[in-house]
Image 1 (cartoon, one colour):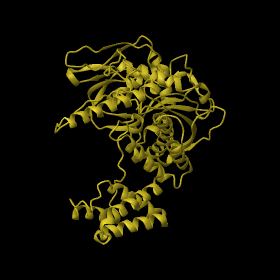
Image 2 (cartoon, helix red, strand yellow; image 1 turned 135 degrees about the vertical axis):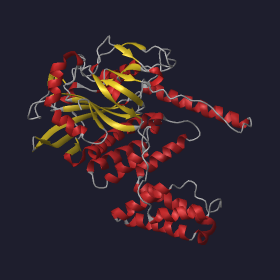
Image 3 (cartoon, one colour; image 1 turned 120 degrees about the horizontal axis):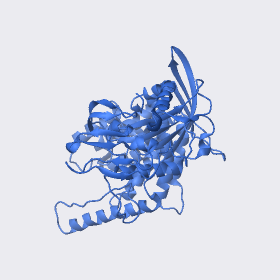
Length: 480
């Protein structure tokens, strides 16, 4: 899951300063305590009001500031008056965020919805902010709000899945803009009856001292958990069972209540005896199955098109940059060679031996033979993709002294990678012409292990594209 983005990380506004002063002055006084009010939201709303010169929001935030300046004057009505203003201002400024918070409250004390937990409200706040001046973001925000408020007979977990698909596109769009900077122009393509990509992109980059332009497309697919229609309600029931156990212990008079629940996105429906939470092979095969079932050939016919898989709901093993190698060395628990998940998602061959991290020092690492071919080498998929990009949250818990490059040669390690991050990983690019805007030549795939010479030539011919993308923060390129 993407890390929780702070709602506010800038300096305090006048409203935020007044709130923090109030919290210190009236600490422990029930009549004036505002436990449910968050300082971050007050700062965010106030900043929006000032930035957009929104008269209504300015009035609401000024009233809140006045109440905080002299709460005794409001007397017993202070808490209700402030809470009403706070709620009204947040719903007016950030309706999608407010609705998402309401959805969390619906589940509070009962269970937890996995899809809902995967939506980063801090990122949604940024999407709504950018929607004030950007048509694409405004459309994304409206579609998310419609999905959350639409009355239908469907279970809520199904509505959340639809909302997450829209959120995924919005998140990918804004983070690509943020991390690639002004060199990349990306816009949403309106949906039609004809299948096609989601985004049109225009990338400006330097080539031998001359500015070049590359037009290409991106098709985004958000991969859901295994057996999602059945597993999501099953996970809700599991969460409810945990809550029931906690309440039982509290009724018995225990001062500390404890219960254990398990979130298993890769587990199949009902009691899957084959499920192994430490298996790299099962992770790879699930990702291949999900990606192959979502990406269609018709979506890659318009021109150079990247397949972008959002796997925030399917956490990857904590492999760091080792995920881009066929096999890399991990020195945890005595050291072992481990198969890179994203390499095999793209280039895995049926029958390849997969290696996992040892469960304990001295344990075996045999994880079985790969049963599915990688997305870019599977003839059944036959995707005319310019490349595969994976958007994922990387736990980054790798301490490596060496790793295997795509060619199979040993590379010097760069030390421990311990910072969790959310990143785009460009797994591979295929050969493009010098003009970069013709159809994709799929006979040569960059860094394909079975034909290293052709693969290396492909990397060289596409290096400007790869470096232009990889030059952005937290954008990993396989040929760097």
